[in-house]
Image (cartoon, rainbow, N blue to C red; front, side):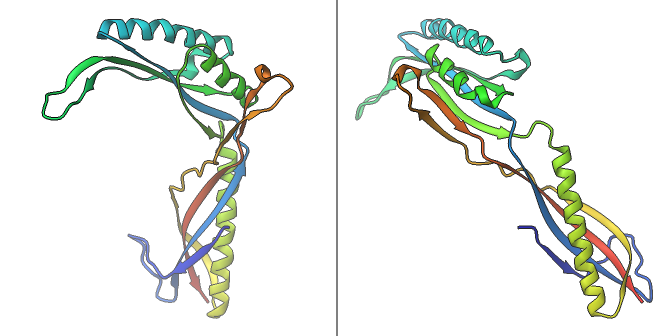
Length: 228
């Protein structure tokens, strides 16, 4: 819920009028939007006796995953390599040095899906084509400026209303706004839910994702000058 609180304060470099009082009000507001973009992390982990074989196997399997991403209609600009690694795998025994038993190669990409309605099919296609490491999704609003502006206006109105309340209680009036400072509110993402949708045939089951709502909050610190 949006809220506000107030305290006396003087902005740096501002001289308080001899017949005036400064009031600093903090106000919060938020807008809510249904996300329209989802990002998932998908990749391939392979193991082999030597590092070269692990990397070769990984590259072969990863090419199939990348082909599935392209076939799903994801643009090149929405696919970004997140990490590539090859690491030895060890066997540990008491009172003995570790012994390398093989190598593990990993290749992971971040995929941005701009049509959330297709997200379930994209996830299923990735796994069907060799992705054995999938994480996410995270949701976001592609163009949040209008939603943030709504929250800014709501927060400012709350700050003004609170200032009027204090001024009235002291027999004063609000003369002017001295300063407005916007703090970083960040985005509170929804908690996504993934589930398999039952159908007549198990083979037709599709991963379903519920994007929920994304909260876009704004925090304002507004300084007012009060006087008679």
